[in-house]
Length: 414
Image (tube, rainbow, N blue to C red; front, side, top):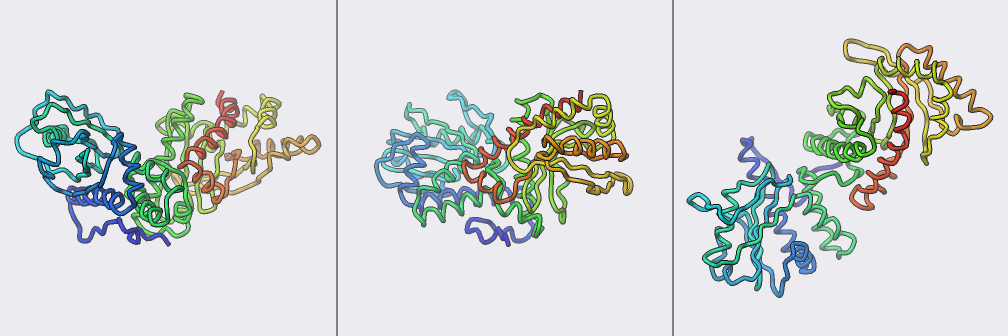
């Protein structure tokens, strides 16, 4: 059972707070989580973090939270001065040395400093930075010296990726603390898609709480966005994606890929379905306009239809599925499974013709024959591929399958 509050960095919201107060609470808590991770891991971890930022450290590293200044003497003599901005999106802010900030001061979220460097941290968990606030921070670092502080902007997903990459090569104490931090970033949705894990699949069994539901939904949304970007490079037909309803007690969820604004459902398109058992990638022909076009294609271009199915080159469990789609009430349909046929039997030199004839008869006889060709992955397989490189290999594998399916999608939509 997943309980976010077992994570040492996860917050307890307590009584109802307004959105601005809650945002500030998460912002402070997330900055503190980063600083605590760096401070209590070994120096090996903190020095790698500094190297990642392009900072060379020559001694002890110190940390402070929510402090206006660490003192002029500790700032102005440093050879390396960095304003580090952390936010959830790609920043659009460009700081200009000519800009003059408004009067007053702004308290930095954190400081990291040593004998030859100083880092001032400004963090956001919603939206972009405030340029005036950043200019005030730069003034603190600049002082009266000509040396202009360096502004480095990172997304929280970059921070997550950096720490995740460390995990295979750190000791047990560092591993536990870093894992707590990266998990925390995932659970507050400060990361991009980094693959599927058991907790996502388990959600569709337990349907535990609202925090978990939101986390799984955001992961699915991020996954859909990344896969759609890859599919668009294969074929501009896939210029949008649609995440299915994400209500409690549903046994799974799906993402459809095709034309924007739900137009994809009127045509053959690609879908990825996720449930407690695993993941399916499939060609999907379900609405009547699409199934009517399928019937015409089979009737007028039977051999071409068969040839496309014979040429599918995908390794792993692959089958054709036909369901009877019947209207239950307005905007609500039942899907009754009629048959599943292994694609290898369709390609078989002796029984392939019989398999085709059976499929074609079903498509002709059913009023709305929901037709799909599916590649199935079990959950263990998906988790294993995800763990290789934070989900990149999984996206590549699913993209290859979709690309192999695409000639059939194009044929059915011509």
